[in-house]
Image (tube, helix red, strand yellow):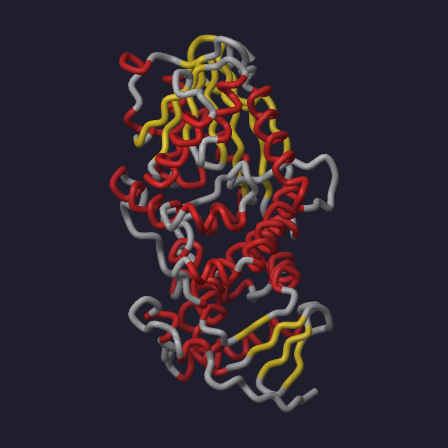
Length: 423
């Protein structure tokens, strides 16, 4: 079927800052052969999906959420040159849109392993970019965290609830409403503190402070807390929130890498709690991370983690791949699998997984609420100095993440680790 389709003029890429968004503005040029192969693969893949794709005067797909490609040549060129990085940059450039963005991306996520023929997947090493060496050294980790979390506390305030908790909530029931989010975030935190048996007199180590809600709730249970962060913006606001709660005698928040912990100087802890921080550690440092946790844990202590996980076969296939998420959202990040966590703890520590529960659909709902709130506050985001390319980037990031959980490709788990002799 053909359809007359006139691309909007001008596209977003024609009016955004070419210095700030050089690779979004620039449309790559590939060889004629590579472009022809890419066009054939893209057309074949889109034609098989339960989507309705308007592209180049044609309608592709088997019906479903709408994906409208405004500039098919640029869209194809970006995918031919840069794969999924190009797919994301094409959205930032305004070259394609989807009225139901998470719905469209969920369809793609559900078909992720079959979109590209197996014969071409085996050749992915020819064009896929690789993560740079040293992406998670101490110096690089500081830069990685600053790139995301030090954007602006006010930006995060616009779409997070009043607890300023930037991780999956756990709701009483699904689907969820905005007014339930803060309570669901507290429920998530309380589940983790219960898992680690945090109570009066507990010494708690938190790796990854966020904006301080977990250490505040732990201190209100009568615990003393040492919390570590690499984000200056988060550190300053978390310290202010602890002070406002009059808990500064119970909570210490440090700007410090977890690798700098010292059991002689810092003592050992009855509980170690870490919420969605392992994703920023990097594959090569997972053993170091768990060894540090093991070293800092007192006899009889418990470790409670909240971790986003991916299938182990996809981890093995993509662990060195440099993605759009790395380039624009979370530099140096890598999601573990359940098997990777089990392997790292078994091979490098005395810790063992004693319990693991998944809440993937709860994260999908959390992300939906954040995305809707972010979109509703677009004018305020712009007033903070974030341009349209940034706003589209973050909208895509939130929708892309939501789709990962809705499709079941991603999960989020609360994991209890204990020493093998104490399990």
